[in-house]
Amino acid sequence: MIAELDALYLRGWRGRYFLLTIISLGIGEIEKRHFSLQLLSGMRKKNPFYFSTEVSINLADDDTLMQLMVKAEFEAVFIGIESPNEESLIECNKTPE
Image (cartoon, rainbow, N blue to C red; front, side, top):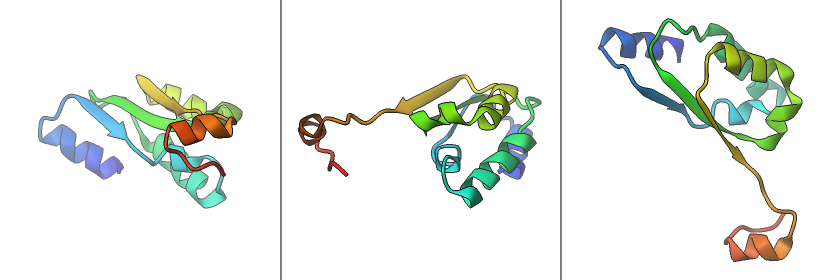
């Protein structure tokens, strides 16, 4: 991923970069969190990208990931919040767990 950012920079890309699942998958499972930590640690703000991602609300429980996202200067974070109300989930076409 870091090599991809470097390649985009060398090709002149200057704009938004949305990390769809990397960060959101980093919450919970140890291997996926480790990958997210490595990726965020390697992200430098030398590239003029506007980083954004989506996460689950439990990102708030992980100070390390949040601080690395701050250092990488993420500009937007979309937070997914599921309703505990089964009727609301059905209304939104979501299957309650």
